[in-house]
Image (cartoon, rainbow, N blue to C red; front, side, top):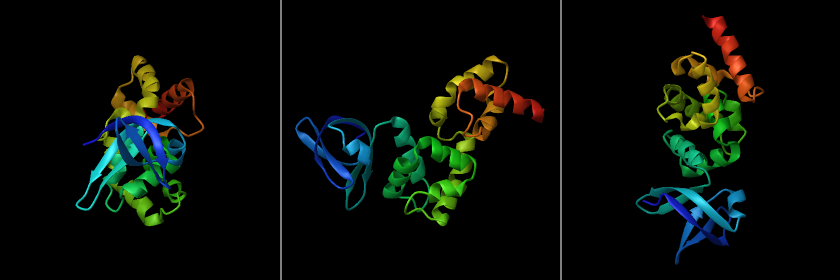
Amino acid sequence: MIGYIKGKIVHRGQNYAIVSCGDVGYKIYLDEKVRAKKEVELFIYHQIREDASDLYGFEKAADLEIFEMLLCVSGVGPKVAMLLVNGLGRDKIISAISKSDTTIFRSVPGIGAKVAAKIIVELKSKISKGDFGDAFLQDEDETIEALVSLGLKKQEIMPFMREIPDSVISVQDKVKYILKNAGKRK
């Protein structure tokens, strides 16, 4: 299985690029912004089927992880998952699942209410249980560390992390928000 490729883009197609690595060119499905670059470093999802062997590339390992998570949803294939990851990004996808917000998914062309609801239903419990690891909350590590150092337990913090409004951005404001709301529930 191919998991990582670094090389020069030698040809660009409508939704793919040929990346030269050594003396071999790999056809990789990529986001438009990535296809515009001259050289790339990509984390790869290698899909092998009876009739094809396709590569899907991502600049960040976290984007590959959310892509693979979306593939766990019945009815969501690589092309739909790629649309979601490239159209929304990892953080919006996780936020939409945590908040059960189908409108965010439906804002991506080609994603209807049925698929949006299916994604939320099938992934909400997995995200809340942490089945996909803490990689999805990498950006929140500093907030979690600060709260743990103040005496809270990680299990107490995680439900509040998913409830933080999008308008609360800085680590300091997130810590204040969680401390304030954790105090109300005790």
